[in-house]
Length: 195
Image (spheres, rainbow, N blue to C red):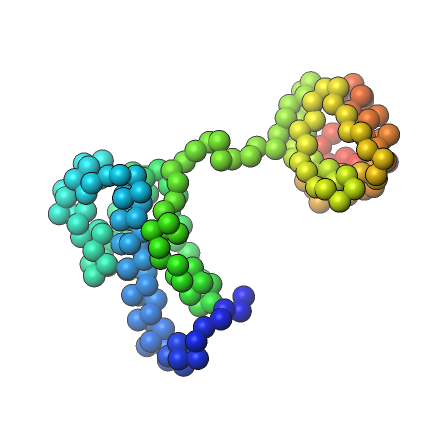
């Protein structure tokens, strides 16, 4: 990844001591700002969040202080659990790091709590056959289809089916209709291509 930075910043980043200080400062302030943004987006006071976290309000005040910077991984996991969000801790190259740290607005820092409706599960069980996320392309439009008994695709354009195995094959619309009208015993198993 190539990151656009100012010449002045690039000059500073050439010095290892500056890079270390830059990362440390951005991680400390970024975490504190994000915790505060998450709390405020939920409309929680520090007192309420401290109670939910099971910590005194003075501890929460330190957690949200960008100058504190001594949060343990365990504390971060507890905070993530209280907000019902995931915690991501990973090493990054500098262009990626700078890109991630470039927007520290409350909107960018806020993450939604777990919501099952935000997940797409491309799996349908049909007569005991599991069809995993078959991607069907009709004429240039790509969509994921959940196949159910009696379903069919009507198109005059060639249809491309790609199975999760990464294999692909051109299938004429008549073959699709034929496949969807097969009984569960006749249908190919997951990853098998129609010819």
